[in-house]
Every structure is written in structure tokens, then in C-alpha cells.
Amino acid sequence: SGAMDPLIIMGGATDVRVLGCEVIAADRAVAEALEIAPGEPVQRAVRVRRIAEGPFSYLMTHVPAWAADFDADDLADAPMLALLERAGLRPSSAKQEMSVTLADAVVAEHLAVDVGAPLMRVRRVVRDQTDRAIELIEALYRCDRYRMTMSLTRAVAGETGADGNSWGAVWRSEEGQE
Figure (cartoon, rainbow, N blue to C red):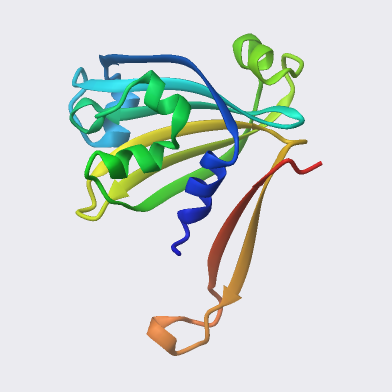
């Protein structure tokens, strides 16, 4: 069970509403993240995930068109990582950034929050076993219904070049937190 497994489990344990799924030309930011040329086709999907208490995440994903062997119906039934695996890819690693942003009018409506409400923003680039970028996701989470927990383990000085001032992380995502 790798560190990405909770992402697959979470996807299967929530309800999803697909707001849109279309092939578009990659803009500069998407192309840079996916390491493709601007203008290359990517599938953009927008989804809202819900738990019993209501909506908790607004997700926008971009997948290179060559890797997007699924449609809106598939996205409503299965997590993205599972769909990528079904397409023959092996999501193996990811680089993730977390920050805070404010809900705009569109996101606020879908997450049932006020415009300007604080949201946790997670931007992640997923790579396959050959280190090829296969997904860019920007996820916006309601802070009252989602949290990320990180367990840290201190690196021991002298082991694998560690200086004793480093920490290794294990992530866990949890929805439905108050």
C-alpha cells in the first residue's frame, strides 16, 4: 500500500458530480506542468466530490489526450487514478503543493460556501512509472470538511546522507472532518 492509495480509497468512498469533461488545447501553465507543448490536446474534467455532510471538494484535472481513455460517465463512477490504471498507466509518484485561496463565485456555489471563503488548494502533478507527467489536478477543499495529516519521521544523521535536520513525510487525507 503506497502513499497514493488513500487517494484512490477516498475517491471511491465519496459521491461525485461531473460538471464538465472536454478536450481542450493546453494553455501554457497546463502544458508546462504536463511537460507537453502549449496547444496540445488535454482532457479537462471538472468534478465536485460530496460526503454525507455535503460538498467538500472542487476538482479540475488535466490529462494528456493520449492518456485520457475515459469519459464523463467513467469519471462519475471511478476515481481518476483508477481510470488511469485501467488505461494501462501506472501512477507511481506525485509532486504536490498546498496553499490557501479564496472561493470565487463559481466554486462558492458548488461548494456551498460564501464567495471569499478560505479553501485549501492542492495542486498535484502525477507521474507514471517512467516519470512521465500523466495528470495535473487542482483541488479546492472546504476547510471544515477536509484535512490533511502528515506524520514526520526524523532522518538519522549519517544515514543516506541525512544531516539529522531532515524530516520524511507520510501523508493521509481525510474527508468529513469538522
